[in-house]
Image (tube, rainbow, N blue to C red; front, side):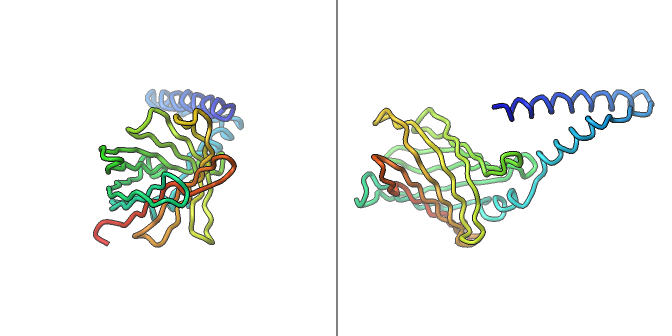
Length: 206
């Protein structure tokens, strides 16, 4: 929270500075020289907003139009419920985030979910959020990318409506190639982790 407050304060400072520079230019005057503190703020802001290699990973491997095949396990070791769907993912806000829209069917009902994933330069972590029509919560995740295994790993905690208690979850996205990746979702209950969902994404037309 403190980081967000500092970032918000920096944003306000830069807006005020930008307005002052713009006003000076409009009146044909030489814009005022930035103070060392203002220069440092500007440099910090540029680093915080920069699009880097981590953002390019999202664009290279996850952006596009996808056919989706799902498997869901209601209990460990049981037979999975299978389904199909689509996913449309595009880079937004200057390549800083990827926005995904999932559509399909869940237990005989239409399913739609939306996610936003990015890389937070300040936290030095991948971050994401997810909402869908099967609940009213906003799921927030944080994670990393391992170049050796070509996989993203995210962690989160969510409130289970059936158990009325928090559940730890782990999401792994394994990159097969630019035309295919697999998402695996694991949940820890009663101290034991088990896979509850697997989604295979295949690029349309590949």
